[in-house]
Amino acid sequence: METKKKDIRALTKEQLREFFLKQGDKAFRGNQVYEWLWQKSAHSFEDMTNISLETRQMLQDNFVINHIKVDQMQRSADGTIKNAVRLHDDLIVESVLIPTATRTTACVSSQVGCSLDCKFCATAQLKRMRNLNPDEIYDQVVAIDNESRLYHNRPLSNIVFMGMGEPLMNYNNVLKAIDKITSPEGLGMSPKRIVVSTSGVPKMIKKMADDAVKFKLAVSLHSAIDEVRTSIMPFNATFPLSDLRDALQYWYSKTKNRITYEYVVWDGINDKRKDVDALVEFCTFAPSKVNLIEYNPIDDGEFQQADSKALDMYINILEANNITVTVRRSRGKDIDAACGQLANKGQ
Image: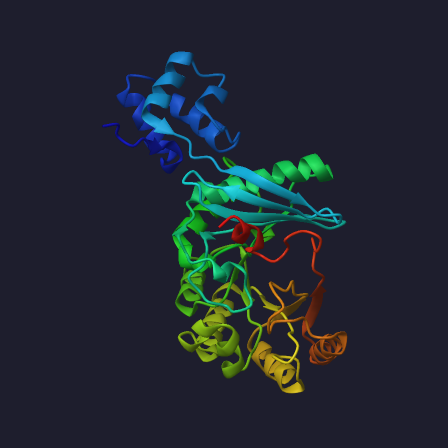
């Protein structure tokens, strides 16, 4: 029976150096292989052209490179690109390239499916199958960087963890991926250009603060009234707003980084004056910014974008209270734009 080969990218540089020493080779060979795996994103051992054929064969005999594959790519008229990404075990996740005049942002997934049950989210219709490994997260970023260079003539500038899954439920792997993305031995991106968006897991927000992470935090809030938030994000019953607020206060006290709230205004759900007043009150304990996001409906059900009057009310009241507010227009409307829609098709 063939023993299952280990994915070589699970090894640290030190472990690779030790492996080569045990093979009677020189330790620096491990450095060369590590560079091929991360900086050069080699898909196979054959790509490693400065390493002898014999050594490449030896690597092939001992290891695999479980590289992702862009299974399906949709390109929008506005330049947005959506990838259905096939993993080594044939599961599918999504990543998106979002271009603007000044930047190109990668929106990446951290889990296959999601264990949270937000009722407005297409990904929540897929049960959580597993966490992504650090290399699978990293590969999504590399693929989008390549697409950005090919279709937009510039490298990737920003990364948001707003794809499929709850990043804080895959905390260790997300942090390892970010370490590789920001390392000079990886992609060398600044952590300040990375945003991790969470639905709000208080214990993990406090852990991020204790771990002194350098990336930015966004919270998918959508309501600052417990009953309303629980009706659209049922896990709020377990992690109520008081716990979330306490964790965010802790985050701000440790990091002094302003908090971004992601917020969709839905017709008949959170489009009243009392909803805005609650949001203003929730924003007062730490410097914050509110991103009002245009919604991509996943069906003809209860979640429909509120009309422009409701949006204007939010903007006017937030600004009157000196809270920074931006409106994020939906991109890629002519493709399967809502997160999880493309992967849902493949299920």
